[in-house]
Length: 251
Ligand SMILES: Nc1ncnc2c1ncn2[C@@H]1O[C@H](COP(=O)(O)OP(=O)(O)O)[C@@H](O)[C@H]1O
Ligand SMILES: [Mg+2]
Image 1 (cartoon, helix red, strand yellow):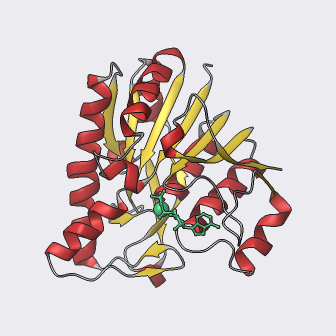
Image 2: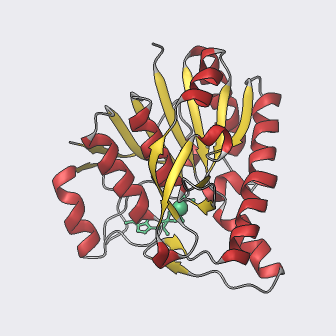
C-alpha cells in the first residue's frame, strides 16, 4: 500500500483565495499527490459565516462546533460542497493534481450519528472505504467537504477536523496534518508549544489554554495518535506541507 497523508485544510485557508500560503499549499499538495496517496479534507468556516451574514442569519458556536439548524445546514452545504470544494478542486487540477471533489455523503462514505445538542451536526461513526479507495487506486486525489449523512440519509454538518481524524484512522494514514491559521498550538503567553503528549491534552482544555476551534483539532489529534497514525501535526498553513512547522502530537 502507498504511503498515505491526510491533510485537513483550514477554513480560512480553504476559503480565502488571497491568503498567503494558499498557492504554496496547492502546489505542494498537487506535487505530493503525484508521489503518494493524499486525502484532503476541508472546512470553510469564514465563507459560511460571510454567507450567513449576507442572509442576516446568526453564526453560533458551542464548544467550537457550529450550531446548525435546518436553514444554516442549507447554507453550510451550499458553501462547502457548492463553492469551497469546487474552487479547491479546480485549483488543485490547475496545479497538476488529479483532484476529485466529493463530500462525505457521496458513495455513503461517511455515516454519522446526530449530536442533537448542536442541531444537524453529526459525528462520524462508520466509514465505508469503497469510493475513496477506488479513487486512490486510480491515483485520484479525493477532496472531501465536511458534509455527511446519518444512516437514513439525513444530511449533517460534520466538523472538518473530526472528519479528517476519522478518515486518517480508517485508511491507516501514516501522517495527519491539520493546516490552520495559527503557528500551532499556543500556550497562554502565545508561545508555540512544539510538542504535546496525549496525557497533557485534557489539562490544556480544562485550563482553557485550548479553546474554540482548537478543541476539535486537538481531540482529533488525540484520537488519531491513539489509534495508530504515526505523525500528527497542527501546523501553520503558511508554511505548507513540505516544510511542516507547528505542534507535533505524540503518544
Ligand atoms: N491554544 C490555542 N492555540 C492556537 N489557537 C487556538 C488556541 N485555542 C484556540 N485557538 C483558536 O483556534 C483557531 C483555529 O481553529 P479554527 O478557527 O476552527 O480554524 P480552522 O479553519 O483551521 O479549523 C485559531 O485561529 C485560534 O483562534
Ligand atoms: Mg475549525
